[in-house]
Length: 273
Image (cartoon, rainbow, N blue to C red; front, side, top):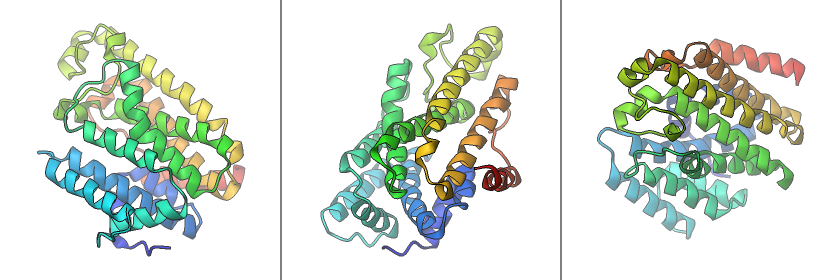
């Protein structure tokens, strides 16, 4: 097992407040694997989310990953830790390829206007993360669909939460073709107030349905792993509820639960799970 170090810890902590704090409830061995996974995916994501984007850095990162996968140690703890994890937990290499393809698309594609386009991106950016997590927890194959749905639901609420941030990147991830909106700019949202609110409510309802489908698979997860998974899911539902109450909040701040709320939810789930 590759020794996970501070670089994995800091990369994960800086990239995902909700899931990082929820993951602290995993047993130590699984938590180390989760840190190795998220260190890799957050690093790849950071290349394409910088302003300006680091296309060359992303290309080198992918090349070093592929060389490491073929047995040539990269010397990068983020890459080598993930490759060791991938071999040990028998990740399907196609899952990582799908993830990297979605990340690469952020370098060129700025709009995903239909739900089909959104879901194609979400498969690589989030559903495969659910598949990785299922392997880390050694779940049975029947758990994989729910794992994908959980990744899908979490990514989708992130799209809603991050509208203002994605506007700065010139990106649209939500299926605005389902509305009268031509963009998700704050100016247009306020001009078409009722249409924007209806659109956001419809997307949150879609998220909730996917989240319910994901939760139907909690029964496949051993209790010691279910606690952090359920805690993260609860926090994403909380985020959706806050936005549903005031859709325009997405233009004022990024809606995220405080660490204390996450920890309290985790402690509550220890009792009730």
